[in-house]
Image (cartoon, rainbow, N blue to C red):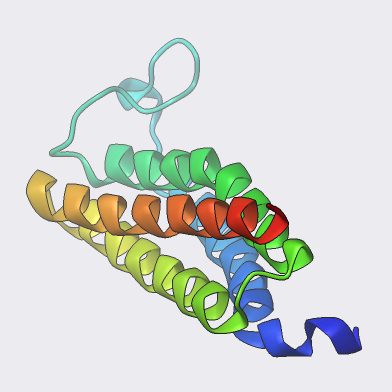
Length: 135
């Protein structure tokens, strides 16, 4: 573990991400009712319904988990500069918390998209750092 001490913020970000996804999973089940569900059991598409927005916030987090974890771990294992790995992983977490709040509490598509884009950029930059570090 000594070799990974310099990546402490990135490691913390990975741990926090698992907690965030777990909290969103719990939130996504609150308030569901039979009349507002599709046959598949998911809430019907209706962005004015907070139940639907909670479900979408959770599913979006799940969809981004693999790329975030892969890019962050790859950057650490490749020995990418710890400052940038820590900064980008931490910024990803902040952007995704903001996105979850905006997604659940509002219907503000442009702000939600901005938060998503910041998180996406962080994942992409982490992947690029990993590739550059191994070349």
